[in-house]
Image (tube, rainbow, N blue to C red; front, top):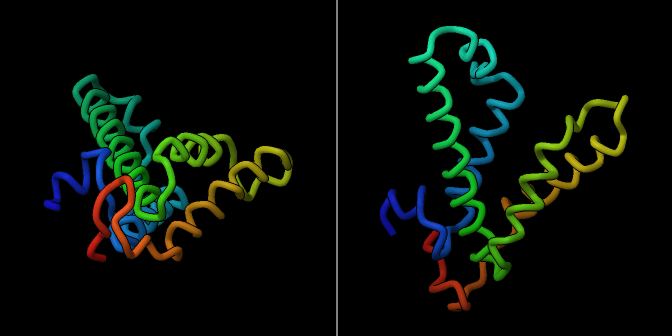
Length: 133
């Protein structure tokens, strides 16, 4: 599988490596280790606004594609990426003022961590041959 298929296709399987890379970058952005403030950028000019929206859409698609393929690797439907993503966006796992939203985000984090450590199926499954990594 080439890099384009890994990043953009919804079919097939990927191992833990690409998924862990996605999680590390995503969490680094979420916790401010990588400076990315789309709200501040969107307040500037229209060219920057379009660039930021384009980048955000690209990042969203890549995260969905890799998550779907990682779910395929462990034998689950890619539709599970919907609830993992939605729960992750619902709230801040450190916000004690909103315990239900905090719990929803925590469930998403647990699911992501499970996908980071769970080995993929060693045999071909309905989603394709085993991932190499």
